[in-house]
Structures are given as structure tokens and as C-alpha cells.
Length: 307
Image (cartoon, rainbow, N blue to C red; front, top):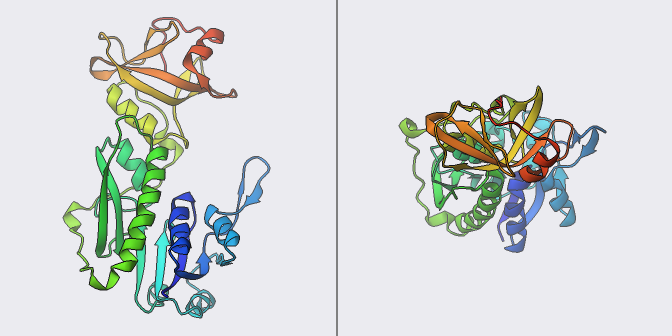
């Protein structure tokens, strides 16, 4: 039986950990980020991976740093055949990479070398990609630069959000991880082509404001890519309006950002003589609601500008 020490933090990593346990791998230790305060109460909340580990009676280790001799020695004491990493959240130092008898394997949510970094799934949607996938790779000291093992490609739906794609790729990554471990001794690693590398930095709120001068397709990508968090925004009457969902629609030319339809539908003119229909929104300080319900209590005049 292969012994695997697992390292992961958010829900993307959960299917991989569950699949390892279900497939009969010995997982004596799980590393995850420290519990963090969330919400207005600032109550400490454990990472999703920690919850799954505890449910399966697996030892959990949450070091603030992996660069201490104590952390390295603790992990090494489990004598793993593999270290498996899925969205752990930190770059592993060489001393940790050298611990497993066989290899450190990473499950990454893109088709490397495209979209290295922290937010590959969101950026694939933000950039309007039609396809993406998952890659298993040997870990090196760089940021997602190691040799690739296996890949699986999937199409991105025209209206699929990053959150929906996230769930699909998490499951796909788990299946690919098991295949990678089962075939490890016969897989020939492939070096990444540096000339094709792109990066996917962390998502933050600076990406939220919508520029209505962009085409409706670009706005749609932004709304889909930021769905769930941090959510695309515009401004209505001096208040922030979150745009949770919508779709490009046909329209006649009009000034970008202006309301061109307001009866049960809210359609906004975009650049390139395109338009975007907002189907779900949330006014600052209010709950999320459908656009038709919103318009009943918040009438918006034709020609009013958003943003």
C-alpha cells in the first residue's frame, strides 16, 4: 500500500483527498492552512480539507510555515511514498520536496503551462477560454514549473461560471490523481514549454467594476469569472450593484452603460453595439434577487447610466 501525505486547503482539494481514501491509499497525515477568522464575528473556521481529514480520523498538521526544521522533521517522520498537493496555498521549500521516497505530485486546475498560479480556473473564464482542464505534475521549487505527468481537457460552457467549473475540475483532478499514482512508474514526465507559460494571479476586488465600454461577451466573461466571489459590480444611483448573472443579448447601438430596456428585464448597452441583460443582482445593503423582482421596487429609467 502506498503511503501518501496530503497537502491542501480549499474545497478544490476535497475530492482529491476523498478519492485517495476511497481508493485504499494510506493517508496518515494531512497538511492544511491554519484556521482563519471569517464573517463579521471573526469566528475561526477550519479549512474544508481539515474537516474531511477529521471525518476520516486522519492526523491534521497546520504549520504557519514549512520553512522550519520542526515542520520538515514532522512531515518526514511519516515516511511518505508521495506528497500530494492540491491547492495548498504555499510554495514548498526544497527540504519538503525532498521528503517523499518517490515524488511530490501537484494537481493543478489548468492545462499547463497556461495559467500557472493561484487562480487558474477564474482566469480561464475571465479570459473567455473555450477549453481548460487539469494537469498532474512533478513539483519543483518554482511556481507550477515542474514536469507534467497527465492532462485532461474539458470544454467550458458558454454560460458556465468559474464556481461551476471549479467543481467540475476538482472532481476531474481527483480522478486524474488516482490514475497518475496508479501509472506513476510508467509515465514519462514532459517538460513544460516556458514560451507558452501564462500566469493566473490571485483574484481580488479590483477586478469587480464593470467597464460597460467593453463588449457584452467580455462583460459576460467578467460576471461568470467572478461569480460567487468577489462578484462583478457596477454603480446605480451612487450605490454599488452586484451583478450575479446575466447574458449577452441582441441590441441596437446605444451609449455604453445606458439602460435600453427596463420592463421586467434590465438590458444595458455595451461597447461594439452589443448589450447585456442582467438576470440576477444585489443592491448594496440588500439581498440578492432576480431582476424582475428588483425592478418592481426599484424602477430604472430608460437612458439611465450605470457605472
